[in-house]
Image (cartoon, rainbow, N blue to C red; front, side, top):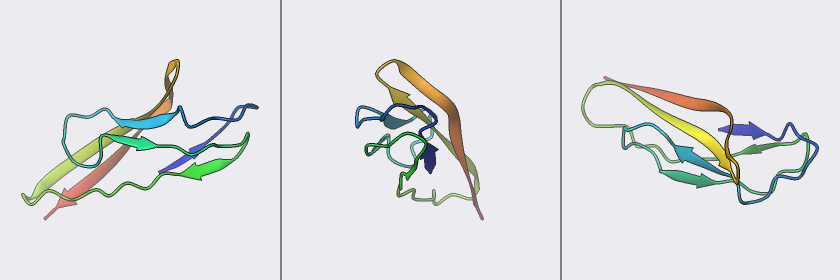
Length: 80
């Protein structure tokens, strides 16, 4: 997942990416590194596909000290 710091402030390690969906696929929390203004960072998550065929989705939201930031990310998996 890519996240861009659109502000003029340095974003510190107090920001994180939290899973907001109920499906228990993927980690529940990902940490973000320090992100300089107008820069992009990449968060990598190991997501194991379920063994049962079907369509699955997991949603993540960046959160900081004051709550949610930006739009949620949804990752869709199709297991056949």
